[in-house]
Length: 196
Image 1 (cartoon, rainbow, N blue to C red):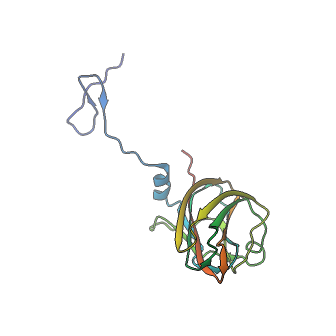
Image 2 (image 1 turned 30 degrees about the horizontal axis):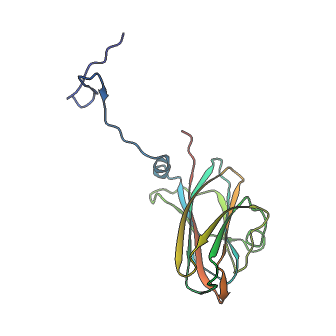
Image 3 (image 1 turned 90 degrees about the horizontal axis):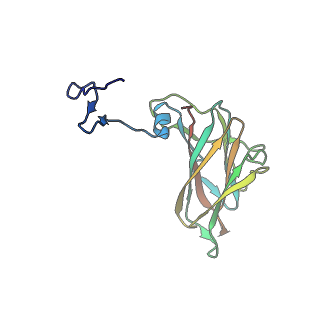
């Protein structure tokens, strides 16, 4: 039988209590914190885009060998002439592959930032933002619909969607305007999944 003796007091060994329990201090970090500290966490943002109708706002296709976890989506909607009978609608699309946003007017997102400011890692992905109001994202499955208050609102929703290499995600926004246009932005908070 192996016996563990108390090393309490010398700064390198664990304490064994009179109740025969082993006492240690531990630090626990989330996997997201671990990935952030490794420089594999990202913020993808469209910047502000003026739209007047339903618009495919953001497309992201993972080209990394690791899976990409999209933790959350944030959408900001500015002031405008909204229909009072309904709400702005945000739709998350699984694996879209066509539409003007992807094929006709692909514009690289203005912000694809590593969330660890000291890291030079970049995300290997196709990342496009709407080039004009009415851009489309098609040939995918609507997966999540999020309602937003119309005027000057911001929505932050945890979605936890995992994209393997070759998988894509699209976000479209219908501001539900009665006339005119409004400013909108879409952001994704995401990180590469590091095997345990």
